[in-house]
Image 1 (spheres, rainbow, N blue to C red):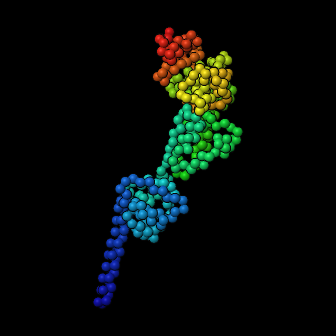
Image 2 (tube, rainbow, N blue to C red):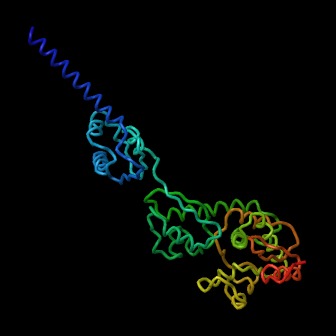
Image 3 (cartoon, one colour):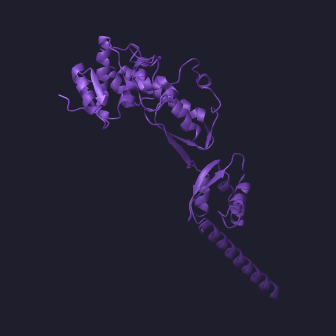
Length: 337
């Protein structure tokens, strides 16, 4: 009987030890991970659970591997869902929260805003400097990029929607260009379908060109449709649009920050002081508000406008009124009537 008692005692001790070990293991899993500050951790494609756990320990994110290794033995499904991506880990997470994060779609994202009124060249520079992108298009010419997008022979200016774009690490810049192109095509199609009936333009592309002029002329929301109205009336009367941003665009790298009379008289394909009608392409990436203004110009009688120097414009019906406004706001020679 003595051996039976000894065996029972051994079983009790072993069971107690097992329970104590299990409780200690659970305590380790429930305890906060070793991080002292927020940190981004990347699970690279092809990494297995054991490699991830070893790397987490090596980087000081977890204190030890063994609690997770045991978890892989007793609850292997907990480690099967780990996925590639960048994850932001926070102090205070326990093992369950850590593994849930590494198994989720809650990955780190990057964002970039392409402002309205920037050129396509500006957009390329912004994306070229963006982090965490696969810069697939960096060495492509504009023509090669458009061909890769499936639009061979199409000029890119104005074709990409200015917006805030969000991506995960490893996404190609080609995907961002595709999203921006598709978004502009969708918005332009929608806006064109709701256009006014009496416009002096005939195609969505002409609306895109006109919207780019409006975008570059003003950042004041209330003025967009008024400027569109001026352009509409000038086009209807066969007057040249005479808008400075087209001169600047045509000068390209020759633009030094100010416009001279010689610049205004210099013939380029875009200079609306010397060409009639619209320029051959947009001069910037217009936003939705400028597109809406282009197809819904405000009624009125103004044929001229000049910058007041505060971001707004003075609108005039006659050349005499306009010249007086120029003397006041540009030359500082007194009050306009």
